[in-house]
Image: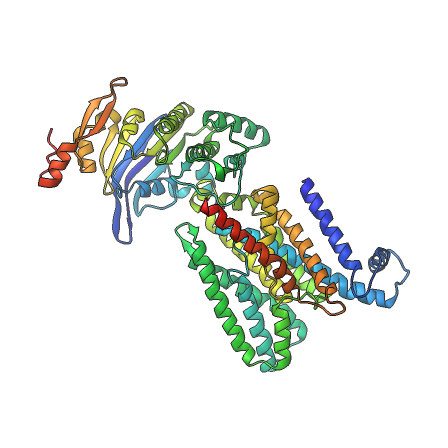
Length: 342
Length: 270
């Protein structure tokens, strides 16, 4: 419990730091002033640029970052438990690219056939199609990699390679029909970007993402049982198929919606649960909530870095998370090699 | 009591279990013996509810197994797998308590009793993945015992799938001593065993299985005979009385087997 408290404090500190630092520096006073004005606690109106920078740009961005970080981290932890393998991540097995493919198809083709769709409808449709794409590819990866009661890791990685390649090719094919602006947008989006965050996106994604995080937080006991094996989990009273279906749906929802609004942000789902397990062991009752908190903090800080490193310009956040995550992944592989040599 | 009535099971058109009937009472240790491919593992799956038989019935305390959901089944029977790999760094204690829905007081009491019986009380804080084969096996035994340990008004059952396959001789008898001590707890035990002598020394009843059929079923002394064992395993054996327990002791008849392999004509007559 104290660990959860500590992680919560880290998250709050990260959010406050991210709120004050940036191309336009703010003080903590400014932030509290704007928040209390917006919530109606004070009538004293803040400066308009303060309102614009903090309330309309920075705060939605921080909230979206925290939600997406939490979603990717808990989805990673849940997938690892489901596949019984600590090296699994939604990007690796193709869930994210499934979502990405569907979003690209939606964006490009709604442009081409010049559908008279209101932009708000496209924004609503995006998470839905991303969820469907993510769901289909999670199921595909699961079916392809399963041997007996265990997902075979080499099959899983290979099916991930195949699925990612196929999705990549289809995305490329779709972009062939797109105009220059769409291509530039896509490139930035595919590297991950929180820059487009606004209250509408928060409003659409919050119930979906928080709902699936809430569902996944309740799967700690089933995931513990599943880490013994599916037969063993059944013997101990788990309705295995029901639980698996629920987890896959929730993961596809969390990752799909995140991808729809922020693009593919890699390695969060791999690195965060790993760090948590190194700290406190394998019990999912702690791994899941701590992954949520650390994942949220990590993405808020990564987004801060993406804003300040080349300020006033911005780096795509996916570059930051991959720069931090890929070396960590390589370190894990080296460790794994050392262990299997003994 | 578990009653198995004329069960029949096939996989991809191949017969695995054929017209099999037997029963398991509480307070009883039943060992299932048979050559590789006899259908022992499939039988365990049918008994535990993991697979459903194509025809025939498995009754738990007079209730058909398919009427019980996984949760209800888990209160009545526990299953110890042959091998268990755990993919995450759980401690031994976490493995033993995994999935337990006992309240705090019951949990502490049950944990103390079970870990004392299985002699894992010194291992609780060690990482499971770093334990030796014998220690892992005892931790797994403790885990499945947690499931059915609490006294209940109904009979409970424990299935063991080759619980001693990776253990040395001392550990093998240690596991069977633990298992036998459960008979006084209104628990019936069914163990699939490879070592015929271990079964002969420990079991109350024996089921001999070959090609999915029961070759013989009854009390150990009745069933472990030279003819039954030779017929089931296609291997000539001699039976002597154990010098201390007087229970049957099975010895391979090496010369006969060499003779039979070379010249054919195995005779099962005494």
